[in-house]
Image 1 (cartoon, rainbow, N blue to C red):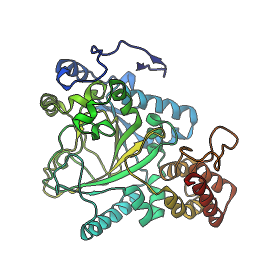
Image 2 (image 1 turned 30 degrees about the horizontal axis):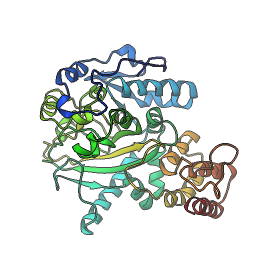
Image 3 (image 1 turned 45 degrees about the vertical axis):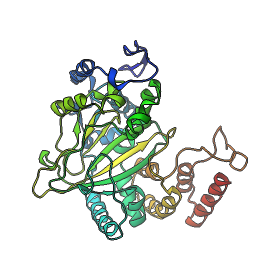
Length: 403
């Protein structure tokens, strides 16, 4: 099926193979080449400020105000969904942060965490990269919230990030994040696809039927927030526009000929501090080589999961809610953050999906599903529930779900 410009779904003929499983040996490099030969047309991305190397580039300074209007917000999200699905597979958001000073505060915290984890022998390991080529913070989402909940609040009170996540995943998405710090001389990754099937071995991936390969990309959105200037020599992510449309791609990316073609055809975009890129996890991509002498490339990699899927990391969202609540209350009282900004921060923090739960102890209320952490957080802000009662209600919610 294909997503049309007006948002409707049209059926199309399935890919030539009728096999229930994808065989890496049957992947067709010519078909793949034909897909990546496409071009992004300006008429297909009317909200984009520019098209660079086939990637639509959106100026969030201009677009941020329209996110306050439900109708235009939905139109913009529909355009992003088309690009991520049937278009280039990647969008670049310039000036994603109106105030980039929050990035400096977060960077300072992340650098401290990296130092502490190195001293404590925590962390380590990385996806697809040689050991020691970079520094990684797993679960930077929760660690930032624990270290400085006020910074976490401002960092994720970002309506642009919230809108692109919702555009691909729908509401109640599950935010996770991992910091990647690549030092001068840091080697490039090999081309790959991402979570879910991209994180499985070749044999395990091949054991899933073809229709599951179609489902995997719509369960996750990949993003990266630039915490400093990222010129090309620093090695920003290598991207292959339109490659996400190749259905057997979870089998194909492991082949040497497909990887060689990736190296011939990939593109990179330089990023400024506060810029972000988001892409379909099925897009062929790889971190670039940091050939600079003195640029330490730091990005916060946002891996956002559908409410209907399993996130990669275990997040203590209960603890994060408790840490964030008083800061959110104060921001609301001071009118420092808009309702939309607070909603974005809550979406990145609290659990927004009701299931699984114990329906005997946690029955549906005024509908088909029980109240979620996120709904409770919003209700507490609206009704002026104090911190003690908010914590007590969280205790009750947790007891019901865990029983």
